[in-house]
Image (spheres, rainbow, N blue to C red):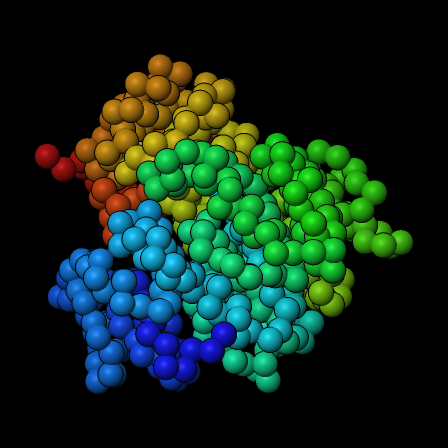
Amino acid sequence: MDLNGRRVLVVGLARTGVATVKFLKVRGSIVSTTEMKPKGEMGEAVRELNGMDISMEWGGHRTETFLKADLIVVSPGVELGIEPIQKALKKGIQVISEIELAYRFIDVPIIAVTGTNGKTTTTLLIGEMLKEEGKRVGVGGNVGEPLILFADSKDQWDIVVAEISSFQLEAIEEFRPRCSVLLNITEDHLDRYPRYEDYIEAKVRIFANQNSEDVAVLNRDDPMVMGYVEKVKAKRIFFSLRERLDEGAFFRDQAIWLRLGEGEEDYPLAGVPLKGVHNVENMMAALTASRLFGCSKRAAQAVLGRFQGLEHRLEFVAEIEGIRFYNDSKGTNVGSVVKSLQSFSDPIILIAGGKDKKGDLSPLSELIRSRVKRLILIGEARERMGRELGGLTDSVLAESLEEAVILAYRSAERGDVVLLSPACSSFDMFRDYKERGKVFKEVVCRLNSDRRLQIPD
């Protein structure tokens, strides 16, 4: 792709957008930018781009700006359905995502990981396993560094491992990972996609340009994944919790077994820090992908033995008088909460709710009926969640996360689990899921140090 002298518009100026602007300037493009937020809220971007010879628009998107471009590069949070982009497409202007732009200039193999849940853990596991083997590994995309920072760096990396979201896949053209990993598909982001099918179609675009020389690592147990498997042209290798496979990864006798080619290996999970049924699936996918790309069994097992998992994802916080508190603030959709609830056999007091993503709550019904002794609901979604799930167990509404934690503690008994797993995004009450998880942990720590903590008026 020749960028020299081309008029390129970058839409969205968070970290990815800023990195894209800098890359384009080095390549000789005539760069302009547009950002929905006002300039006063984008201090870091303003500082990073200060002094660069670019046109910057803040506080909204002007259609005429889009129509002047030769090429439009959209950041992950930008919806393709907005009017300026639709008018640009009708005019024949090329619109691509940042990962598509980066792909055109990355000269090493890419392992791309997507799915509704588990993307970050699996991406980091693969990266750590390959690093343990001594490979020079770049880890980025939707986690770590923007993918564009790995462009033009053949001498720096042997391989790139990228977490890829559905948003990033919407505007690809040639993006072709050597290995694609699809972990699962459950309802998510229905506040952005008109239909569940649109979300699925975005996810499976990860396979669009692969061929028989590539490989796809797929969840054999996920019906949505299997519903699209015939469209995958790459060599298909599966992982499964339920079935013993002739090729691929499966779970048996508290170990992961991996069969690739003629060999068979076992990876015992006793003592492995990562807990939860969802993490067994993530580990199976990571083992498969890393072993296919040159990681030894020794290196893979070493990483499994030390990898602690992610902050805010089924993270143990504290035990107070025999009551265990877990922070799963990253559980922002129904499918994620299902996996988290399945990970405990003890009675659960579940704190859920937040900004409503309009997903179907019914997959939670049986688990709440059988495993959740009390449901405490917060945020914008609490009324709907109360109507649809509240009758399945003892339920109560709380005005704040702090109040919810205190109510949970007061009603818990020794041996219970208090689990924050919202099934919703955080933007009604918090900056992001990280801030929500941080507040949860702070309240639990205060409980631990002051058992007399009172609910504020």
